[in-house]
Length: 312
Image 1 (cartoon, rainbow, N blue to C red):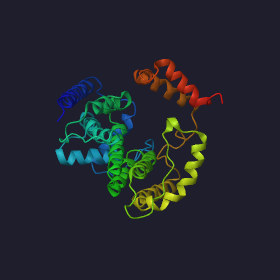
Image 2: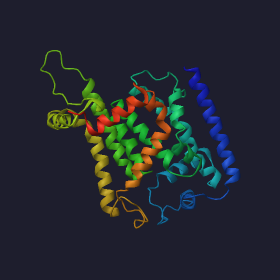
Image 3: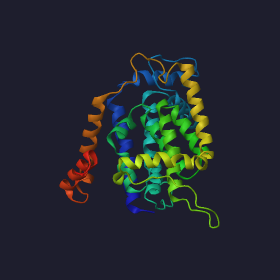
Image 4: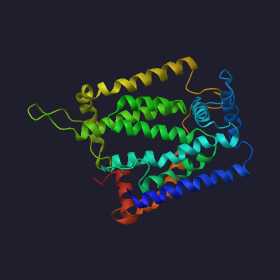
């Protein structure tokens, strides 16, 4: 058990509870999109499952989760109690992220399931996720179930991963992309680290060089090697295919992926979003960027090399 992880997590949980208490004392009326989500959740708490606000564009997973918490803990469905739903998932986020971090670092997770690694606590303080942990929004519960799905897939528990991914889609229908990511990432790891049978012919390999060392030629090699490994990874795709089929059925029945107010939620390519992403990532990630080999000059040379290639 990591003492630092325990201390960080205790401080994270205690401060989150204190902040929610302060938010509830100061923000006593529904804020931002809460005027849509709160009445919908209260309708579910009252057993009115036929009511649906047409302005809501996400599935009802958040309201069902609040209803479950109400039934289990006998909570009221007022604004302060409803905000406990995202807070509980925010407190659970470091525990879930710990499993994902240890998987990618090829390390054994802490023996106690309630002791996260310090990195998981830091990541849970990521501004976008942390901020919405105190409002009645779908972001944090959606994120927790997505990470759980990816973790289950990394442990080759694909039916569980698909189930968790399907649950995540009840919070955000666009999470279908992360369901497919959970499958794809687990299969890439499987193909990279699997061993050939001792007395058989070598298994086909997927050409998968590190991204920083890849060139356009590697894209062609990967494309040609992909058909050779399809039969090896196809059986594990079955549970995800069922989720994908269910999502396709929903999209056909709904006339698109957006529930409710479709006119104000039309998918388009939003170019400025790319600049927001680059600026935000640079602002938060500059210590890691400049601490690499060569410092700032090495970073600049690496970016130019990957963007334009060498002189040759």
